[in-house]
Image (cartoon, rainbow over all chains, first blue to last red; front, side, top):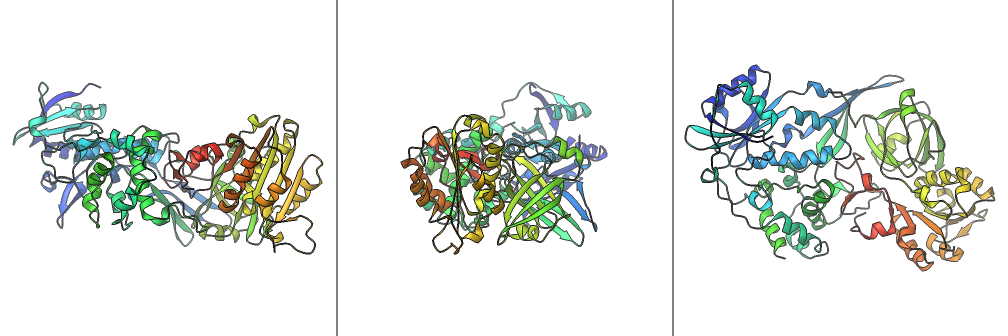
Length: 338
Length: 279
């Protein structure tokens, strides 16, 4: 649909949150606790941390939880009953105050879970999620969204994008039908306006390279010493994958108690040595540098072939989380000029 | 929303257990729900995820042929957590099965050709499905040769079927065991599969080679086939990367631009040469 331009008073946000609550929707927003800002359930506006550049974890757990039940089972003497997880029982969720990079992350994630075999669990959660993002007026040295087809005021993946244009007002872009449903239910809060140039109100994120250039370079870079060099510091902790809004790899594990049990889907990472280890002991990617290469190739080459999406939105979370201080933007820049 | 879930397995009853070799068993599985049995269809080369509830899932090919209706079979070696639990199960026990997943051996395209099957050790099971499928449609193919090798006589699987193939006039079966693996009664060949292959030196003329075995066997068999004049398009194999989901989402079996689970597991040597060697 064509984007609708509106104005929203900042104070109207608390009314919105209240109305979402009354409508049975759960609102998740950045909340600072013990010095760390992450998405948490809120019922009032004063809990929300609007200043945070990027939450530590991305918003992906709203549609792809870190550990998620996929079925349960119960054994009796001569039978086993298997119970499907009830996707209709998933709550309606509003992500409020996510960043454009968070919202953009839902796109490659959706592509993974919807290409060929449709993952109903993921899709049910995504269908029940409304994303109200807030454009970035600040960025830090880790941000590189503009190098991977994003920008601090990017509407992709958001249902509504709010951009702060004054101390009291947001410029609201209604992007999707889901966004329009919120507009229609709250017409008293939104005022008409013509299109507004957001640029003066957005952070300046310098473009250092392009995702297309990386994609092109990778065609001839599989056998290169650049992977050993870059991965020298990598400890294989997998933190980069856990905080990544676009990483969708997972493991499936059973947990058993007596005659009952649950089968879970849990986040996993191509950075772990166990990820590809065969039972025979053979490991197709036995060195950390091969696993680092897989991470970059998957995001910038393979995913483009498999799902026509890049698997990176430039949020910089992996670099912020890395205990060995690997900076993905620097590494990508190095690849782009290799 | 319709409450569908691609992770829920079919409920299967173990109908028959065959001890094949030390730590290797074959299960014949029957669908417990008639509706599932009716809907279920697979083609040779495909695989599935087998669950022991409480332990997890394990990936094996479907070792029976689609021409044999009413059941599926899997052959596995007791090696990890799930296969250990499977090995402890017996006739009448219930397990889960998800599938079929993956691509197929294109046996339609092989009509009118000679077939050369080369298998090593526990890699005969993925091949058994396609062998029986082709033998059940025997008139579609010319000469059928099966070369099968194992570490020792005890490690040969499907012994009763090997005997059946040996006795068939329309199948040429060559069995071999690694040097030192023979018994006094052994009347097959002694030697590694690639060596025996160059010894029997089959013609590559109008012939498809299907190779499956441990990485080291594969590595030394391809050059022999190439020397015999087989082209990369006419050499098929089935890859076995570690998998969890089976349908291209969990990321584990991603090799280059393909998922072994979704785009494979059957590949020609030509396709394999286009992939990074991460298998």
